[in-house]
Image: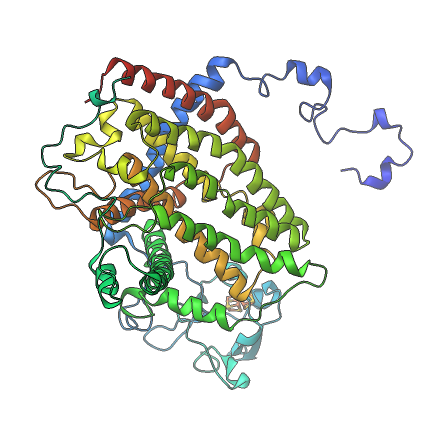
Length: 188
Length: 371
Ligand code: SF4
Ligand code: SF4
């Protein structure tokens, strides 16, 4: 890799070419050999209109099919269908920590998510259990700082956190956005 | 040339009212009220003119409202959305709500603009629209003016809308506006040529420039309409009419005048509030007018598609709305043309082909090869 500073004392003709020499039909020579700018009579006046007309008709057919197919509508009328609303699988609502039936999560307090987060949203507070092993004490998640970028989820090696589907987050109390994601402190 | 060879032979002409002298019940009633049953006096004429003006204004605003709603609804469906649903049943009051919003907005004029031209421009497009609406025959007795040179009148007035864009874009003293206005001017000058060649073909075929006579010449079944009656040439001319009128209306794929991605709104960049809504309204009224002219010239105007069905304004409306559906369909399917492609399409393709088509139609008519 060369930086622009290193070019200072190299003569222009010896500088590495990052772009191709012929950038298009800007010089007379390039224009003469550039066949793209001068299509033949057949290509321009006969082939192109026919191909173009067919492709336009194809497009009109597609839009007409969409118009007639009422079931293809993707709009969801939100407040009315609130009970039956299904979010697309890739939707990123907020970071959640799934718990199994015994109320246990998979987090090992490795703090990789904390380091991956660009906004300092997550604070993993570890603690020692009876066996003097490091376990998760508090998983603090500040939703008001989160940009829902999902980097923490990708960083977690244990699939302990996920992006949830909930999106009704409006609140008048900013403090309620700072939450502890794990249900109980520590584990055996 | 013996014009009788291509005039439709009509047996029922005697039963039909002569559209040039037919009167409407409302007009008759006003005349009777003013003690001037035939001809009319000053009072009855004044009242009738006021009624006509109110009717045209009401019709224009209603048309614009319906068309905006239709466009938004269809646009939604074309793009797998629902379109407006919240304002009134099926979102029918959406245009009214939009209009109200625009009325309440501040009419903001840039400091460096020229007040006279800036405020003149929004008034012109609707003026032109009203003048064209006056000569369109909606039904056998539903027309306002019946000039002998109706078609030439229309082609003369149709340029007024573009004049408004030019004036407005110059008056608002903004480079984006000016670019949009200049594009509109260039586009109108170019496509007007092909449009008038389409008109000329109808004039050649029917031997008339009076719109009522053109419509009356297409009486009978649907194969008496010029789109079918001139074999081939009529259909080609209709397609050219649709393309050129879309360009004249500055609608996608020819909306280079307001190309949002290049000109941030084009000629109406600096307009807001009521001034913008005037442009917006006129755009949709023009769309109806273009469709109505197309229906009048090529699709038999207010004539029913079959002889046994009654003629009337409802047929003109149905045909116009079919053409308007085409315009909307184009808009939500095709990408915008670049300005040089736009000019190439007109000068390299449409204009030569229209001329060839005109000669072809002339040969058909001269040889009497007409359905
Ligand atoms: S989604 Fe992004 S911003 Fe939010 S906690 Fe995870 S890494 Fe941080
Ligand atoms: S959530 Fe995952 S990455 Fe974050 S501390 Fe727990 S185990 Fe580590």
